Image (cartoon, rainbow, N blue to C red; front, side, top):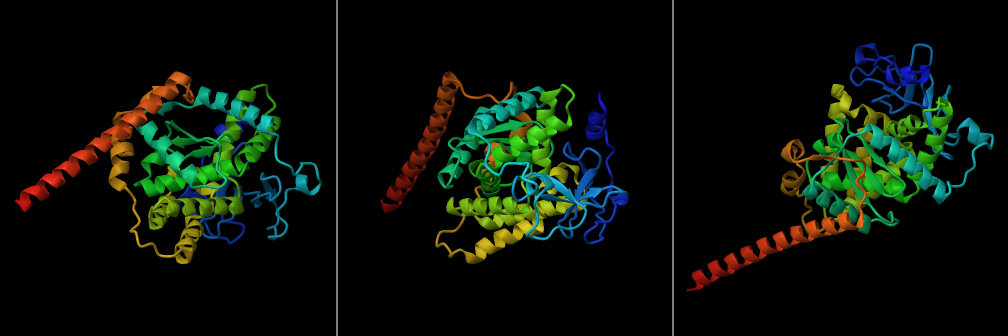
Length: 382
């Protein structure tokens, strides 16, 4: 193991009691631990739960960490940058081009990332759960403009609340994330948030630029591992406050358009806020990558306040979600699979057959219920 790997993987965690004060507001977070990243191998990072500023967790390093408005990469700043001047030194000097990465380059980088993650992560699958997640993602895409050309949801076994959007529209969803959700409204929000990153080309920009930078930093011959580190950094560092806020706005619009209750999303954010305050390690990366739950909840409140009241009561479909994706299902009905499980023609036909069978089942249930209701009505009439 080289020095870079030791710094990244074996850097000891900083407990809340040992947390250094936030250089922006001076407060100490007593709960959540700081996070190691590949882009900043010499220190660990933390987001202040009070002011929301990300900073280096180090006795000798009081820098803030911002996301460049141009290239989308995080960069350190010794003095708090103004709203008008959040650009990294490379972009200020013109060393990083402003245009988007070529589509072929993005596809090549995604192939590298997929191969790296397939070598490290354990992927899981359940026929009924996969059909359900694919159907939910498809419904989200139909209400999103622009939307990815295709969508796929891939589950992997990790307790952390990790989600990652790939440029192709593939969403990597950890079991920890799924276990942390309570209804379909929350699931629709999570999928829509990630698909918004993919549809706007943010996933392509960040994956390409983060990947190339991490490979350059870890020039040790193990490029596959570097691509894995780049994917982890995208999970840990996110897309910056502005892009994350925009993805939240698009996601809550989709949730409302699908007829779900946006207040359920607010409950999800409040639950996340409690876990962060309690120092739950499963949410350390999502806390670093996104604005604080309080800031994100304001996006939901603004949307609810500005939306006309619908005459149709919004739904959350909690019981449906629990039957298909609840804790009992995740604990007993999942199988290990090799890699991402991309559909071949035979597999695609099998998935279509499963979805058709699912629809036929519910159609039969509806017909039986209708026949029963008619029978009761006729009996009462007689």
